[in-house]
Image (cartoon, rainbow, N blue to C red):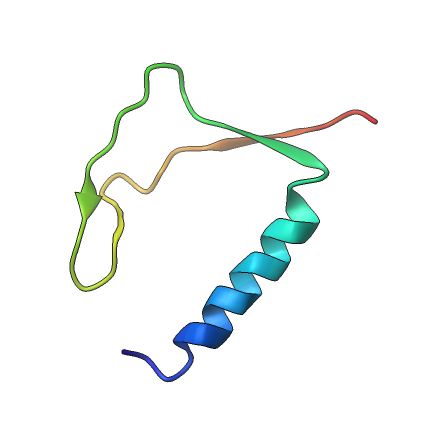
Length: 56
């Protein structure tokens, strides 16, 4: 595994903590995906999401 893996996970958590209170994450209706398992798990199609600003 990568030496910086835990740092990268922490960075992702910090970014999501700042992003989620302000944006709604949406997937296309009826969306289904398959995952690549090795070397790291990820969606094969890149996960087509849209972000919608939450009006406060």
